[in-house]
Amino acid sequence: MWLNILFLSAGLVILIYGANFLVDGGAALAHRLKVSSIIIGLTVVAFGTSTPELVVNIVSSAQGSSALALGNVLGSNIFNLLAIIGITALITPLGVKKTTTWVEIPLAVFAAILILLLVNGEPAGTITRVEGICLLAFFVLFLTYTLVLAKYGTVNEQEDFTIKNYSTAKSVLFILLGLAGLTGGGRLLVTGAVNIAQSMGITERIIGLTVVSIGTSLPELATSIVAARKKNADIAIGNVVGSNLFNTFLILGTSATITPLQATTESNVDLLVNALASLLLFLFIFTGKGRKINRWEGAIFVCLYTLYLFFILIH
Image 1 (spheres, rainbow, N blue to C red):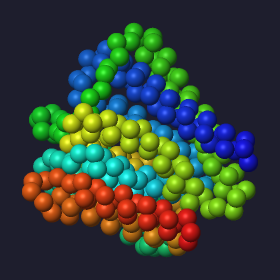
Image 2 (image 1 turned 90 degrees about the vertical axis):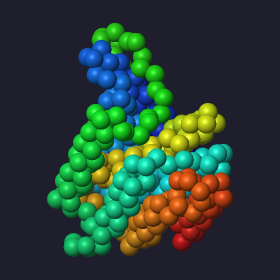
Image 3 (image 1 turned 30 degrees about the horizontal axis):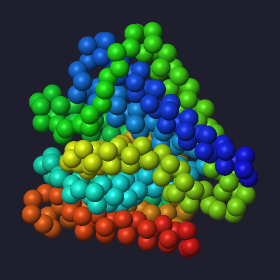
């Protein structure tokens, strides 16, 4: 048991450091190749920060642990919406940019409803390979849209990031170290999580919704809190919504393409919470003056997440 906890903990730490190495090396190499900073932020950095969830899901899918893969994505999305936005809004009200309000958040609502429909369509309880490919196609469209906005200078402000001044050789070394860390860390984390679930009689779905998803989302939580304390909280919602779209279209799409994802009946609760939380975020933007999430709304989000955790753990 303790060995499995060590595997899970070590895997999580290695995953996060691997992602940081990959982002630093990839961004430095792209900069040396004269790629603009905004494009680096929207591609290398965005992909890099999503790699822990992506690697966990690829390993889970390859090992046939589809409940863990689906739970990781849904758990991460729900944690992002209710916990990260909620905690950040408690620190300072969150402004929401126009394109986030009218394009990205509605797209996140659409994505949440889409996977709810896919799981409950035919064949029931399954996201098929064809549906996974369709999700990846949506991701390509979303990425294209984002890059077009960047080209015309209307993209949402990205969180500050520093591009390291590495040599080409050092950049490549960091990329390789990052990939190795992600691969090894992902295997350790999934192995530990599955073994803990089996030994304690807990379903892989619950492990994915809690320990794995929260663990891989902690860097986003830390980033959002720092941004709020620096009075840059207006980028928090854009980053969270972007992360959820990456999770749904890229990560879930990749997982289902590798092997069809089987959902349990209980997964409908998670799918509904994901959809309702996305819709609630959109509605809360218009409850006060200006487009923002206020402290009292942040408190509601945190309470809802606490209730959701309590429900799935005792149910």
